[in-house]
Length: 150
Ligand SMILES: [Zn+2]
Image 1 (tube, helix red, strand yellow):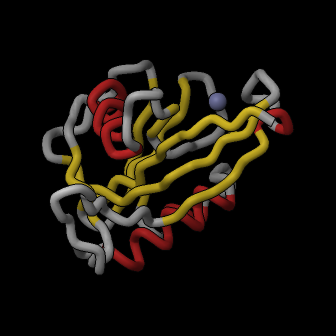
Image 2 (cartoon, helix red, strand yellow; image 1 turned 30 degrees about the horizontal axis):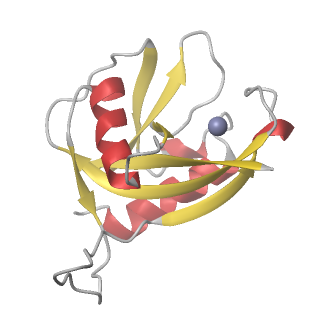
């Protein structure tokens, strides 16, 4: 099966996480999108956040034991990764799967909706809402519990 690489962001501010919803949509999702061929996941994340939210982001990551040298660059460690069969989801068309990299980050500037999405900040208690996919909810809780005070 064709595999697309995608990146998602758990954006944290004041102990809340940002989720987005298509106008007229019914489910909340993490900001993000496909990684272009020439991009690293981090470059794609930066681009997607600027396109969707109008802001750059600062990645929050666990300490990385690997340090950069003259030929290899150390990159921030993702919060999580996933493999998702897109063909099983009626929200997408096409028969492929997504290998996703999920990062935690802080917005550098003001977050605004630039792509006709409704945006909402969720606290841990807000995440109890039923309309949030259990996987999205689990990733948000993991990010808040690990980096909530960052
Ligand atoms: Zn795809």
